[in-house]
Structure formats: C-alpha cells, structure tokens
Image (cartoon, rainbow, N blue to C red; front, side, top):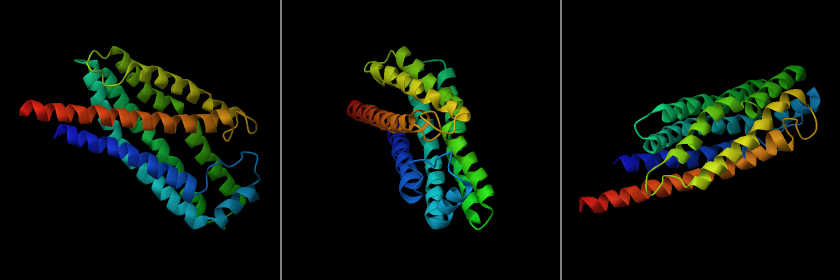
Length: 235
C-alpha cells in the first residue's frame, strides 16, 4: 500500500511538470520570457492580446504548484530511507519543497492581477510583469534547501540497491550550479544575464525539466521494484 501511495506521489511530479509547461509555455505564451527592455506599451499589448490564454495558463501553473507538494512529500520519504535514523535531510527537503512551491504560485497570482484589468495603465502592467518574472527566475535559495539534502542523501545512501545511483548526485549538484547565476538577473536588463537570457532562464529551465524527469523516472523505478519485491516476499 505504501509503495502504491508513493507511486501516486511520483505521478504528481509528472503532472506538475506537464501542467507547468502547458500553462507557462503553450497557453500563456510566456516562453520565451518577456524582454526586460520591452516598453510598457509592448508588455501591455501582450496581456491585452492574449488575456484569456494568460488567465487559463496561470490557472494551470497554480494547479502545477499543487501537484508539486505530493511529489515533495514522496521525495522526502525516499530521502528518509537513504539517510537512515536521522530525519534532518528529509525534513530540510520537505520544508524547502514547501517554500519552493510558493514561487510557482506567487508569480502566477501576480500575472493574474496584471491580466485581470488589461485596460489599466501600461506602467502598472509593466510593474506587475516585472514582479512576476523576478519571482519566477531568481529565487534560488529555497530550491537549494530542497536539492542539497537530496544530494547529501544520495552520497550517504547505504541501501543495496541504492535508491538513486551516485551519478544522480553529481547530476543534481551540476544542476544546482546551473541554477545559481539566475540571481544575477537583479543586476542586468539585457544580455545573457538578464531574466530572459541564457544563464538565468534558458539553461536553468531546460536543466530543471531534464533533471526533474530523470528524478521521476528513477523514483518510479525504485518504488515499483520495491513493490514487486514486497509482493514476492509475501508469497
């Protein structure tokens, strides 16, 4: 029963990623990210021309944040299995995941406010758009509180077979290094370090998608194998 519940949690991870990409990219058209150098009228025109698409898209982004929570709980349970008697790493990951989920919800809410009255002042829409993008791209620390305990747990794991292979620990560390330059977006409005540039946006986004899918597949495989082994042991 526990394995089946955890498989539901991993399924929520897949649902999170699907809803997030669907909402942010396909429905809202927010990928590629809006240019920080765009004028107020240019940004306001984006909201006025695709108001309903943005509204529906942001609903899916908020739904995605909901799916992120059961996945976070499932990952915490796997970390607990790796770290043994201590629960420090699993609890840190859980708290980090809860905090991180807010940075999917808050930008979506702010963009919903921006599109709620698209006839309002272009300068106000620009300010709300800026706030949404800064909250989306730059809040690395809560995600690090979530991901570094996972890395530590992978290297501490004494289970045989291991929950995650050691190379996943190195991959996760590399992913965190890729995310780090995102906070430089505070200081640039154009070029590779602006919020729509390669370092704060494209590399972290593509790395996050690949990393998450890899983690889901490995977690699903481990939980399924455990379920099969438990079923055989009962017979």
